[in-house]
Image 1 (tube, rainbow over the protein chains, first blue to last red):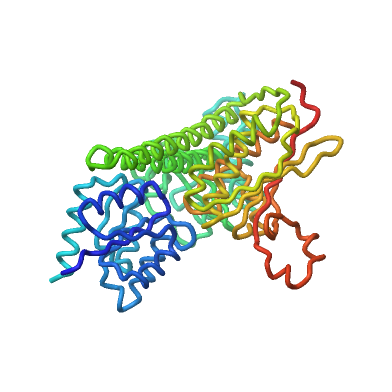
Image 2: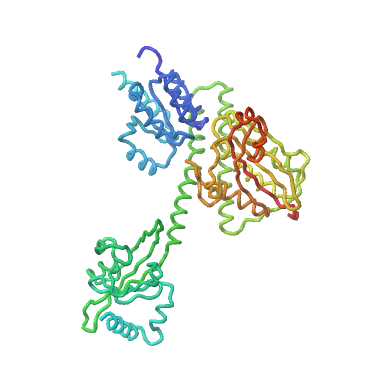
Length: 131
Length: 385
């Protein structure tokens, strides 16, 4: 990958977005943001990011709907998605595996995100995609 | 056959329990009692049992207990049936029976005891059933509330932790650091408001909520403070506030609690009103009894059937909502001897119109209307400071 990888954050919590943006920009990634599901899908089409960080509880189209929708487009279905959520662990266990087959989420981190874990996960997924 | 069995059993019960505890007493008790044989035939049941099964009129003696309870043709599994376990183990057994009929659920605590013949054979099982539906439902609701409370508190705490970890680990300019500190302070304050709602809620539940009415300048003691609290956070989200509350209006109320009502309504408007929501804080005048205030916002209209429901305890029509904010607001308004309701409204420029107003508009103006919701609440003019 010659140009800097572009990462799209879709989360309605602007403070969280700002924090994640600072962490990612600190590692020279280009960051784009969207604050609801609809904006997120439009941003994917416009920006064609290399990776998406997605919250599940979003106003309007929720994260699961966004994920499902993106995976139906041949041109976007291979963009790795990391789900980042503040849902309690127990609820995540209920939501993610249940939906997992069709969601095909590539990564999952609990909020607050450990910056090191985030960067490691991002690097790992981008590297995998390069192969 | 049925009659003689029942009669014999009643004799046996009377013999066992003594004269002062007759079948009449068993019938008057608020717990259901049934006696079944090894083939699950009901030999005797008291009045409460018939009520619990919702078949007070139908004859149930001689029918299978699983048929009466579950409308089933086959016995229940050993796992869920206390009677089977008692016949098998000859021990007292405790269980839970859940009856689902016509979309309603009943939660019945079941205790079953072996009943021996004079020859010492295990002949019958006595099942004592207590309808604890209300208790189980309260536990379910309480679990849901705990889950909501945890989530509502986890969200700001997770964000504060995230911002703090960035401040600690990333080299930032002084301006950026200040911005992050401001965000942390703002999120902490919003988290505190959430806790405040839960504290008020627990006061309501304990019947300890009292208001302290004082005569205040409504704009400076309520509106101005609530606008200051929300403006910074809301500006970033593109929220537009329109305030039409007169600056010289004096009202007797508890300003702290009325601020909480406003905070809940504004928080919902920001949360669910979408991007660039327009929020109007209005004053709709007064009559002999009440002052009328409103908080209207642009956004998807709440459907007719949901307009009543959203003020009920724990009911949230939105993902990520606890359903507690509007319930608390309703209680606080009622403490001010007022009412709260929501009606559809229509925004045109900075004006919020009701359905009756838009009939007078021309086609061009109608085309510019933006849907919204208008939350109206009243405060009694009779409150004494």
